[in-house]
Amino acid sequence: MPVVVPAVAVVRAAVQISAGAVTRRRQVTLKPVKFAPFLVIIFVCLVLLTACQRDQEYSANLFVFGTIVEIKLWGASQEDAERAFSELQQVFQGMHRDWHAWEPGRLVQINKCFEQGISATADPNIIEMIQRSQVIEEKSGGRFNPAIGALVRLWGFHTSDYPIVGPPPTQEQIDEILAHKPSSRDIEVDGMNLITDNPAVQLDFGGIAKGYAVDLTIRHLRDMGITNAIVNAGGDLRAIGNHGDRPWRVAVRKPGGGNIGSIQVMGDEAIFTSGNYERFREDQTERYPHILDPVTGWPAKDIASVTIITDEGLPADAAATALVVAGLQGWAEVATALELEQVAVVDESGTVYMTPQMKQRIQFLEEADHVLVEVGR
Ligand code: ADP
Ligand code: MG
Image 1 (cartoon, rainbow, N blue to C red):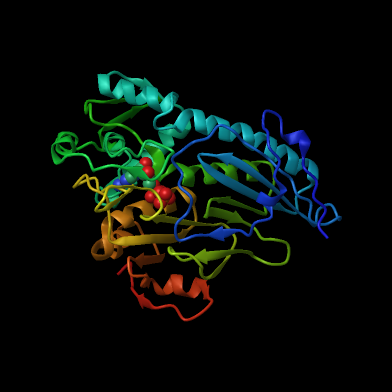
Image 2 (image 1 turned 30 degrees about the horizontal axis):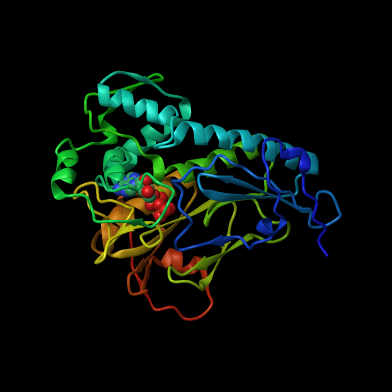
């Protein structure tokens, strides 16, 4: 019988202890809980699963970005686990403050400066997100573009309350923004300063921040000497090491519910999914999902979800968004440009398209209707 010990020591400003939440299975979903709504309240719980000190799993739930980020450690001492969770709680609060696209904070200030054509100061994490985005935007042919914050706002996706009910914006409103062709590559980085001469550039890290947050969490744990961990942000996750004598294992869910199978996470890997069916606007006739094609200004529609396995969260997160935009016709080409190997795409009818490398990774529960697609050639 597991002994459940709430770690009161690590719950300072925070708040609620929930043992139930930490006992859920790790899952990678073909549509994760959405990142964008940031919540300030963080709660932490600690579960001790066995009595022997280093042979146990410690887990904490940090509730941030509108998503429960479940962190599990294996082989760490209780003292290190408590310290890690406490420090990460602070780190997450900083991310919330600095990266939020519409709540007052550093990113909102930066976007105001961009509108006014004046220079803004950023911190190293924002600089890294911009510089890496610039490369991914270029490689993905502009499908991933975190400078389209004005479009995301126009569609009403700067909210935590879904679904949004109401008609889409007018073509005229969309064209007004598109006329300026906002791009992350319009931003000039000079040390810690940012400037752009394009007033339509508005940063929105919704498509990348969860990936980067997971990477920073892993970096923090490693710096503390922790070598076995899994960080799961609503189905988007990265793992290092193992769970004692077995790999970390995650379930792969279907967009419509249920599981396709499971994946064993080997060493240092990230698994990220983007989808079009959880966060959307809708009117009487149609649904308008929250991932936008930066070229047309309209939501990307024909892919239900994209799942990517690679070695880091940030590129996996960005690439998953880019492939949804690329659509059924274009995803393989963009996957090649982004040098991805392990990719699964599910279309609106439930057909799974995947690379042979991805097929090898999924232990299917039952024969899934799938098509193999080679990328990288
Ligand atoms: P999810 O994990 O919920 O499927 P994504 O990681 O794909 O979401 O990110 C979607 C979010 O990214 C949107 O809510 C918006 O904030 C932003 N976004 C929308 N379209 C794009 C795009 N083409 N490129 C970059 N960011 C985008
Ligand atoms: Mg993404």
